Image 1: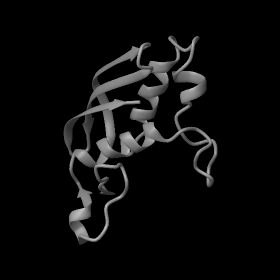
Image 2: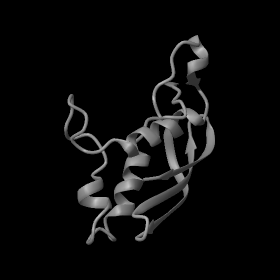
Image 3: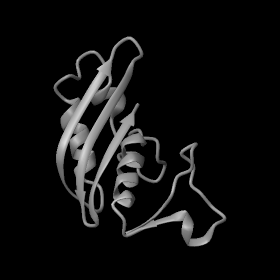
Length: 117
């Protein structure tokens, strides 16, 4: 799996040849998970059905029973991810941030993911 690295601002990195890519490393599927989680449903003009339904299934008043299954499906549906060995999430109502942590097994080894939305 070849995946372009993100910089500190979560933009694709360019200008350094192959060092701009994660190639056959556990971090490649992990970064793919991150970009899949961050993509809001309807945001990508080529396929408005693709994305994470943040506003309707994850964040909101009546989403406690839907948020984790939705996020787990997004993680498991990522290329290179074979399974989730550990998963956890926390919502902070004061800051309105949602924190997702997962340990995943990939075709290239195990790795951890932690994203705050």
